[in-house]
Image 1: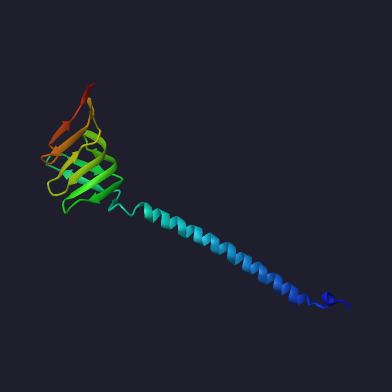
Image 2: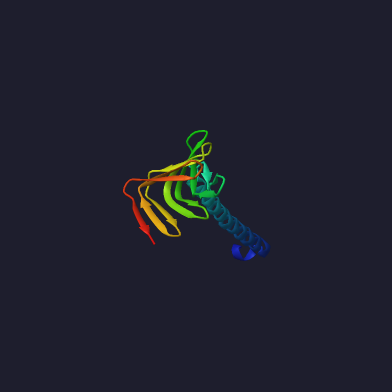
Length: 149
């Protein structure tokens, strides 16, 4: 008789189940390693940022100016570099720019990047600005365009 006819069916079924289990383990291990890779990539994107989505407020007696950005980096104890989609909002106006140095202690902000100031009756486009005196005074720098409505 032929030797292959004498092989036990239980042995064949056991080997088949073992192969299926090994294949499933291989598939799941690859899936878990991809999800770990995605987490590591997202951590690397934020590694050079000290503050993600910072929010600050400049307070004075008559109003509050809310400051938001996508990224922030500490320059020293008091100064923070705000980057990407920086917005200043109050009840009276808003300012949009890309880079600002905000001083938490003095409650001042300075930008040397293109800025857009919007209020109810005017719009100012400038190459930078300086907010000081607790938000009571704003000076616009460079070539500025004022549009009155």
